[in-house]
Length: 320
Image (tube, rainbow, N blue to C red; front, side):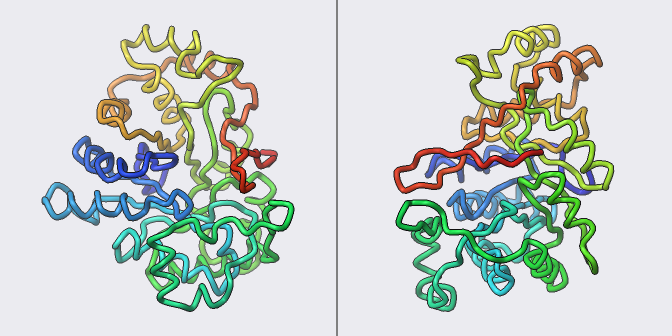
């Protein structure tokens, strides 16, 4: 799993106003890996929690692994560095340990005046989301015209200039990742591919491909969601295995990914859950347990993406 800590705290869908405290609790519980994104609109809160614990002397910056993601409106090469600096400013950090392309597709970029204006940049930091989803008259997202291979070249420049230590991708399928890895003149391979992964969507083939090409996999949404009215946490198979090991269902789901050599980033703002989710290194699932969990696979994607003004969720159909 390279230099990425095996378990991290995700800030995806975390309630506004709760993230800073969650980060502080996590650091006290032993977390080193924190995952956020411009699109989550909470980089400032994540950064505030980190700075607080560093100031207290509870942790050093160099002991932490901070990851964030560049949004789809900034695929254009000339915008990548601007987007990175925007995230660094929100987090109030000098560098990132990992910077990811959030999705392989790009959207129409913001107006050039918005990019160049410091006052507009400050407004964006104070009012995140203003330019996130460029929509046409039918309320559909307007795509950009930048190839992600060009975007990657600008991401590599961030490593050269030491704004980031590592770069990676998120939500890339097998063909997209292979195309990137085969790019002529590739200077830096992606450190990881962050994908939705849980027992209802085990991603067996994609994980195998990534690991065969020395690209780690990071599982988001690892505790899953609801399928046919049953939450993954309440699935009878998960419940039984948890009881046999004297652990919580969440701990079983996290341990499942660790034993697949997959980095896992569960999200929570509840102190007891945050602490519980990292207490997964004192037991081991049997091969029978692993096989039973893998048998739950229904190729079910639970993560959805809002692309219309009326906030209806529409899943990106990305075949892995």
